[in-house]
Image (cartoon, each protein chain N blue to C red):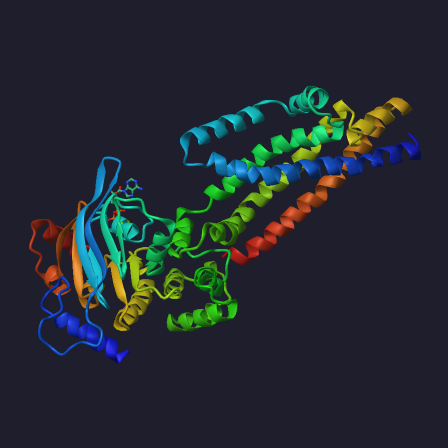
Length: 214
Length: 280
Ligand SMILES: Nc1ncnc2c1ncn2[C@@H]1O[C@H](COP(=O)(O)OP(=O)(O)OP(=O)(O)O)[C@@H](O)[C@H]1O
Ligand SMILES: [Mg+2]
């Protein structure tokens, strides 16, 4: 393995980050309305959402990647491997984030809603001023754990040719006829990328906790 | 304040419990009229009838204590009054607003209703992620359109009044239960309600902490605030509230001047309940 090989692997870092970040962004944004629909008091809607969420979670991520790339990406509209992968992981992230948000919401006692209503706060204000800040506190640690998991799962995108870390590791191992070293480097990259996420989440959590904890 | 006290005393002397101002006497500057009136209010959860045909009126400046066994519908009654729980039938009148509970009611009407009512909960329900000051100021800004400065000024005045100005920049978890409840009272008062509703405000508190909350409520009552208080504090019911109502099984068992109702209940059911309370 040469320096050139190392650099070749390192070029996968931005793509892995973009895949993870893109999918998480899609999931974090779509997760909220999905959670609201899932918590709808309109029973048919609620049941439908529960079924859809269970269905999306039941299939392995690689199947979603294939479905979007080979299914939709080649037939209906032309999706690049990268876009197909972000879309696939975005869908999965959305239902998982919806569950994380839901966990945040059910952790808020009914009394908070009642007090907010009794104070005549508008729907918008209840969400923005009362619910969201409390939900974020609860949802932050599981979200960080989820991002790290998502980053590892993003290696699956290598199967449809997205040149991220795992893909490049395989390329280098084929070029250099070495197995252990290239993949060790790839592994080290994943660890190095997940550490800051874990650290950031921990720090943010501690800061937020410090204010409200006894 | 002294003037308000006089009004309260005059009312206490008035012979009729249900609202009609006494015929004689000098014209009071503020005629005693019901601020809250409930007519035939009923509420059921599925097939279970939680409130049955409740008729009630509370005069301006009056304090009404509601007592009764667990499950008798006391909380449900308060929650129906401010529409946290929509009643099924009957009429709720607060000030100039009169709502028919059997008909669909618009959002603006519920807003108008709640604007006149302050609510204090057994479990305080302060917002844990905001400072004490922010807790009291938030709704003023959002619902009354006060500026941050105006709101904070009002809030500081009220925190002063409940004896907690020094806690303004703390978070609620740093306050004792009694302090939290006093903050919750300040938060409700900040919206200038016509009537304050209290649902067992001291039940979650140690007796000593309960006392400081009761002191604030006493002061509030003597300042002329109209109050409906669900409570197990017989001392408060007897000494502070003009009228007491005993509820059982979703109905009004007894109603009248507090001393009469508590010292000399007419029904066997009420006697049994009061005995149980006194034996504790
Ligand atoms: N949301 C609800 N759904 C179904 N039943 C309810 C609901 N809320 C209250 N109830 C029932 O209505 C009855 C009256 O309840 P409520 O909370 O008003 O009693 P309470 O007089 O306040 O009792 P406590 O002294 O224990 O607070 C109870 O039997 C209760 O189980
Ligand atoms: Mg109750």
